[in-house]
Length: 94
Image (cartoon, rainbow, N blue to C red):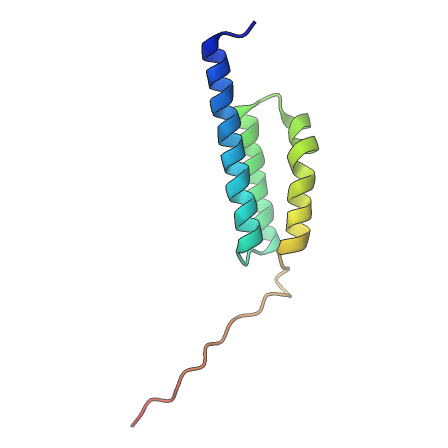
């Protein structure tokens, strides 16, 4: 039987995982992130989750890995697809 302190600690860690995943998914979906940048982000999220739950690699693969792969495929671009934005400037008056 878990102690109240252990339950509180696990609740805190679960909340932190949810927060990290929510922020990361939002960044992938709402920014103009490249595939490589998103993969680095997901790798750091995975490391953070496994730091919080050291025995959670299987759970990570089942719950989050598929979701992140889908988001990366749908919302990121390869370097060849990225295009710079050119803002038109009015000529300076002389």
